[in-house]
Length: 222
Image 1 (cartoon, rainbow, N blue to C red):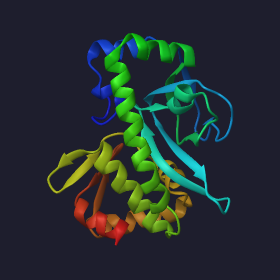
Image 2: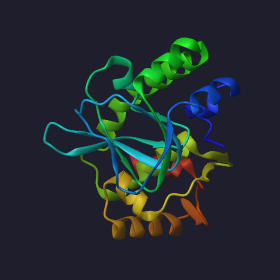
Image 3: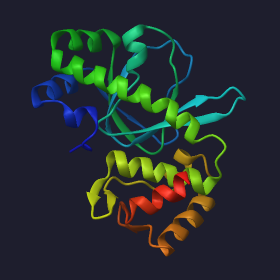
């Protein structure tokens, strides 16, 4: 039900059910800030459906895209674990459904179930390692390059391997891609058209297929 690399997909069924029994189910519209950098809150969101972007402010007061999170991922766990202010801002890129879990519930769950605790710890380490790379990768790039990097990241992390490429089977609209890449929607439309015309990607109903990950990587990181 969830992409392979996500926390929910990797948990054993019992641990997953325990985590999903926590908190209350909530629904958010597009462009809603769920967590704001530096604020003093400590709830955790277990994403069930939808896409969010994680951003942070740079030294010159710009937003840098740090990560993309989808259904199956956990967001907000750092503040729940250490009680410190939020380290980043989380914003919906379309409708999102999640479980909103209090810090107390979350910490109690990790204490009672070592499998959940281990999965959360591994997820945190992976995110922290990736954050530095993402911050650098999305600073000083033109719009087409940012879009290519977003597509490459999602395809590698969440896509299903198909031949020399990968298929993103979770719906990503052009407005969502524009939000994720910090790009105007008309620019995204033009960039996607160029990628289709050159055979790098193809699009279908609610899907994007990267036909050649190696070529997309060259566009994104050359």
